[in-house]
Image 1: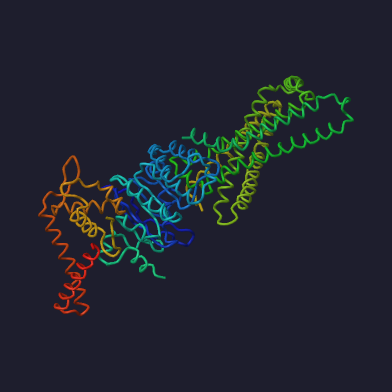
Image 2: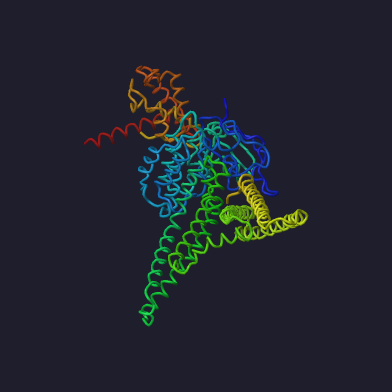
Length: 232
Length: 263
Length: 130
């Protein structure tokens, strides 16, 4: 099977510090993958490298067989861990910006999600609360029919109800052709939704298994195993 | 995609500058009206003096405001939209990096030139009676007669050089900001330092080239006309500006593509 | 009936149990159409691939069958359901008995306790009806 994401001996260093250290990974289409690890373990670095927001120090990334660039940006939908919304647009305007630049954007779906989350399209982005901004970004990202969704801490800042909605959106959005990679440290909330788990520790991969493999072999939840592996 | 970028760039910036333009022209009109009232009739009026002073102060304030806002727009749109949090959105759009830089550059130029034109227009509105516009053809004639120069060609060349020089200097500022962004702390200060450093380097390069050119002219036919010398000087300046602009553009593009590190 | 998934056992195995339970208890009637994989996954808040695997397993066991064009259906075979019920009952009783034995009860004690509690439950039911 053709992998949607391949990392080959991927290393990213900042000066002497290695944020990612010789990481090799293969992720197949049609999977929901958890990228788990404590803060500073290299989760965001890996996701940024996939988005060409960083350049690898050594090694290679292939997305759908191509190095990060214009062609991969067309098929990758990325939710960064921070708000990138500007302060002068209305919600409807940023939605049209996405429609303008991404051929796979589904306008109807975006408006549907806005309605379900009670967000007024004519509101100015500047006036939205932090939680609402995160919801708007999630709507922008999930309204694309992308082949690879890279969600960096999508459930960190939102309330439990919105968290459930996000997880339902991810499940409801599932298709055999698209892969979702979710980075988080809030594992217990999402482990039921995941196919595979990647544990990152100090820039290295320590585990790649399926959730049920972990539960079967250890008799523990992924959350419990995580606490054990990363015990301080 | 470049057209789309330009569209959003104009939307993001016009809301900042257009209201100032309108305000400037309105106050230019008010000042012009106040000036046109025969002074003998009102010279002694206290109200007239106060009104004309206030409207002049407002006019000048708006003028300064436009100057500042134009510079802020030029720097902010690059620094904040590409290197700040908004960069997460911009750099994940399926658009080449050079198009981002070019769109910022073209719109910055658009506003700088527009601000210049609006400022000139407002001055014309206020002082059109006392401007020696009728003498321009005479100046051109004199140029033609004394130096064998075509005044229209000369102004055309000067305009092109000014526009290109403007572009080159904006890109130089961009490259300084991109260089400053490599620093972990005090990025704006670092950007300013980089700008000073880059300017010095450019001055040195131009001075060296100029020295070479000086020799070249000296060694060639000494009976050259002034017009010829000016044309050579233009050519030299064009080459300077082109090297400066293209060099800065490539540097900026390289930094944004290979060394990008959004916070 | 909601989905109750424990965190220390494979989700796949738990989904099979819960689906069996839902079929036996009549939440999904015999011969009726099962919701789509995605809807079931959304309802249980689990990964669609895991839900799919559980359904395929139940199909292999004969509790579900697929009609090429119209989706998945529950078996119409009542015997099958009785067998499954029997299986679940045996598992539950075995689990219970193991706990009791661990607590140190003898077989006789366990039996007499069960009879006693059954008696109490019947009285309670009678009381609540009166």
